[in-house]
Amino acid sequence: MRTPNPTARKSSLTRFQQRTRRIRHVKGARHLTQLAVAVLIVVAAVRHQVEQDSGAASVDALCPFGAMETLLTWLTSGALITKIHPSNLVLGLAVLVATLLVGNAFCGWICPFGAVQDALTWVRGKLHLPALPVPRGLDRVLRWGRFVVLAVILYFSYTTATLWFADYDPYVALFGLHWLFEPDNSTIWIGLSILAAVVAASLLVERAWCRYLCPLGGVLSVLGRFSLFRIRRAPTTCTDCSLCDKACPVGIEPSKAAPMVSPDCIGCMDCVTTCPVRGALAVDAPVLLGTPIRLGSGSEAEKR
Ligand code: SF4
Ligand code: SF4
Image (cartoon, rainbow, N blue to C red; front, top):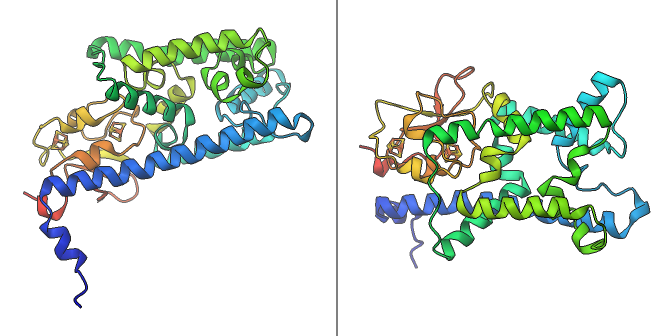
């Protein structure tokens, strides 16, 4: 009996089939990673709630943003934020190093709150709800919202020497599971109300929280400018078909990248896998290598 030749089978696929398969594989890997992290966070939250004396980390301690609040308070006042957990600082450092290497992939592949927003986009699709278009100029202005939120949080964390944002953070409101274990706690309603608003906004605008309000996303977008690997567009190869723009979950226009995509990119790779032209979009390490590393931007069969 003859063994099927995978190469022959691959070349018999149409360009469209190859692209669809590529998109499915990368999206699948990303969503699996997001799901695994979200499950870990939920398990940690349950342990923290059930085994109160075990010292299990709370979800605040499992958010790398807490590390920033801690560091600022420590640098400016010499005091450490109360109830801080070492994992918070370790995570913060790990995310910092990862961002300097591969850009803001934390938001696209790891953050469980990003995963929730991706799930809301999926729900919107299932409900056939139209996405709310945000004009480019307004989008640019609204993105500054992340830095306004960041400034407010850092100010109050510094002046109160607490994880001030925890009561307002929609991530904590959802994954902290206080709504399940302490429904009588009156303070949880602030976070839950903000969470409800974010859910509503994310049903209308894909990843609305990440784009306009997330303070960690703001910090990572600044650091992302210096990352080793970034997505690069080859203007001479690109056909300006705009398929990549339609694929981008955070409203970036990779088709206009000149040549690096915006540092607001969350590294989801949807544009690279969607692009039908080989080499038009690629992950590049401009500083060290000078040559792009081809990761899924068109197959040989699609080469023009
Ligand atoms: S630019 Fe590409 S990789 Fe970055 S967020 Fe948009 S689709 Fe994802
Ligand atoms: S999908 Fe590819 S070819 Fe089309 S505009 Fe984007 S980078 Fe250019």
